[in-house]
Image (cartoon, rainbow, N blue to C red):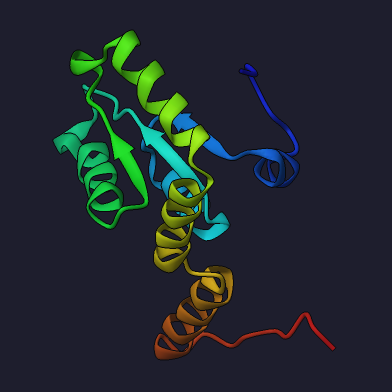
Length: 129
């Protein structure tokens, strides 16, 4: 457990399991990295959007979701111990996560921005030679 990680790529490379909230960028990063995760949505998030993201990953077999109000130390300890004792289960969940990730998300976002700017008639300056 660390309070703040600067080198997220390094942390992802070392991790087998993430226990975290279900924020949009976090969920996307775990999926792209192919990480197994235990997701605990923030109970007061607008329109329960974190619940929806966590449930989607759980349904795909990529994560387990538990609501904060349903948390049980004993149940979670047993689930995590069982998961970490089964490399096959970790690998299956990681593969399911990877299947949801978009390795080329940055390029897709840039392409969408360029298309929108071109549709608006904005002149683009190329920064790449």
